[in-house]
Image 1: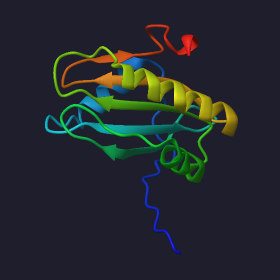
Image 2 (image 1 turned 45 degrees about the horizontal axis):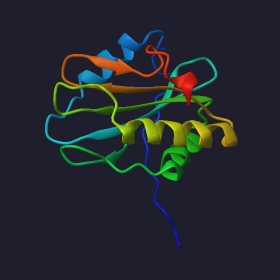
Image 3 (image 1 turned 90 degrees about the vertical axis):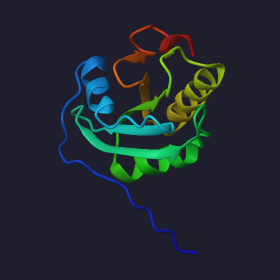
Length: 139
């Protein structure tokens, strides 16, 4: 069976130094109609090597499969990664599902050797960073 895997590679992309810079990039692509789950792979220099919406959801949730996330990261040669998704409403606090998928991706990343740096939840004007809120170490 042949698989057609398409993805966007930015070589070299902008280096992201702060959560706010990434949120500003994501807000430009905000979709008020449905949730987008985006994977952002970073190379060894910290530049974006891939940014891809890997899953689309409805108004309130999106189903995430780690194997799909890591397929794109491996193909792009990512050393580390960040995931992000938009919330349609004003509430940016992570749901139990958001926390669960973050834990799962972090564990899978440990096994594969691609470290999850952050999970960002954003809306049309601001963002919530697991890393900034020191939640990544708790997982």
